[in-house]
Length: 135
Image (tube, rainbow, N blue to C red; front, side, top):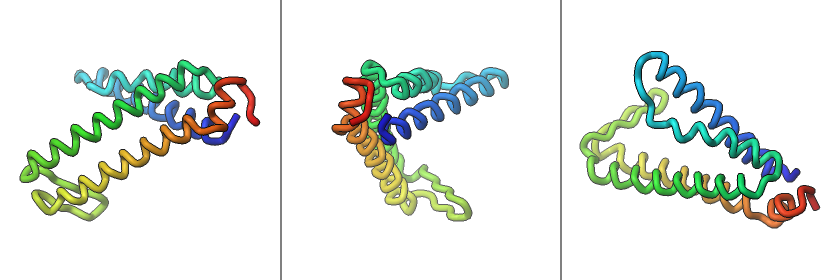
C-alpha cells in the first residue's frame, strides 16, 4: 500500500471516529449536531485502506464537499465581516481585522484538500486501486 493512501485512509478514519464521538456526545447532552454526515468518513477511510475504488470515489466526493464548505465560509466571512471573531491561543481579533486571517486559513484548508485529491489520484495510488498492490 502506498504511504499516501495509508495516510489519507487513516486521516479519513480519524475524522470519522472524531465525528462519531462528537455526534454521540451532543446527542447524549440533548442537542442535535449537523456534522452527522461526516460520520460516513469512517467507512470511506476503511475502504481506502482496503484499496476499494468506490471508497476513492467517495473520498473525492467528500473532498469536493470540503471545497463547497470553504466557498461558503469565504462568502460568510466577506458578507458578515463586522461579526467575525478570531481566537488562536492568546491571539484575538474581531471585525475587519480578522477577515484576512480567516480567509488565509480557509485558503490553506482548500490547498490541503487539493493536495489530498492529487495524492489520491497519483500514479502510485491509481496502480494500488486498480491492482491492489504497489509498484
